[in-house]
Length: 356
Ligand code: NAD
Ligand code: IPM
Ligand code: MN
Image (cartoon, rainbow, N blue to C red; front, side):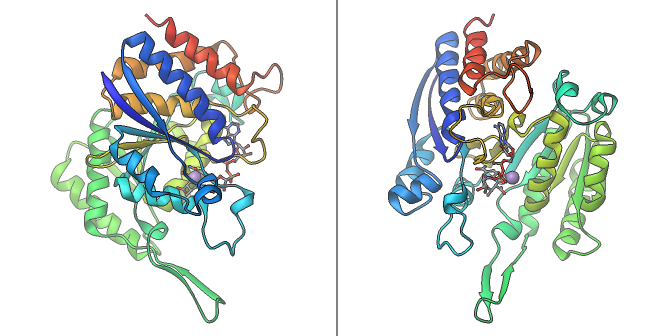
């Protein structure tokens, strides 16, 4: 097949991990006989430095004509002054809104070797296979923001409509049908009005349209604990934007590293957006030691969800799995014998080139 893929490396370790994705995409194209047209665009801090805009119009145009978008990460100390007029993260939020990617899928299925990396008892990790469905284009991230009283008071309005909740709930339910048919909806309905709307809409949509799916509501504060005490008891976890952001970083502890968790952001049409869940990791940027596997696994999700290339996606997942089995590990996963970002990426690309 022919496809156009936009690569947005961004800041910090973003360019380091996206470089490995590019090598992997070339390996997939060669092995499976596809033609991928790969075009790079600016986003985040580097885009502010070069154009003054964290999401230049050229990048929007590139993403809108692409079949899928792969992003590295944005942000870093250089652009983090709380009084800065413009921030790298605004570019990413605007891109998510522009592409209409309201459902952010964040799978967490620790590799069998994860027990060696994760700081949890090995028996807790047995059978853990989670899919977070994080609402991505609403809530406090996108509500009205501002200052009052000469800047001495600040506010971020958390706002959700029935339609926004319905569409992501339906998406989560459809995904649950292909899994263990169980959804945990996480909210803070004992305090927040938005959560009470979520609770009533989720209950109605499941009752009316998905009677075959078992669902429960869990309060977010308790969920942070359950996630570490009994992670295997959950299947699909549906939640709003801010809670999903926080819970998925917590869930990376189950996998062993932030550097292992991919994500797919999808809407109804237009290009999907694929990105590792981690950020620009300023503490290790520029050293060539970042873990590229989250980004390579995001390529697998891109192949599956935006291009319909399931065998290719499985080849990538299998190659990463082989790398973990073989102990091809970056410094976040091992204290001894760590490989570099490019050695890890090259190992995965080589397994794909020889895939059956
Ligand atoms: P972070 O995810 O960048 O890093 C958290 C910790 O995890 C760091 O110790 C880092 O070294 C480690 N880590 C993350 N990814 C890794 C990888 N691939 N390999 C090895 N170690 C890895 O979070 P942070 O430090 O809180 O944020 C840094 C910047 O990144 C901020 O500006 C933030 O806004 C931004 N950010 C961007 C995205 C994104 O672009 N999608 C996501 C999260 C954070
Ligand atoms: C993520 C990041 C982003 C978010 C930031 C950088 C806007 O933390 O993708 O998880 O909060 O969504
Ligand atoms: Mn995050």
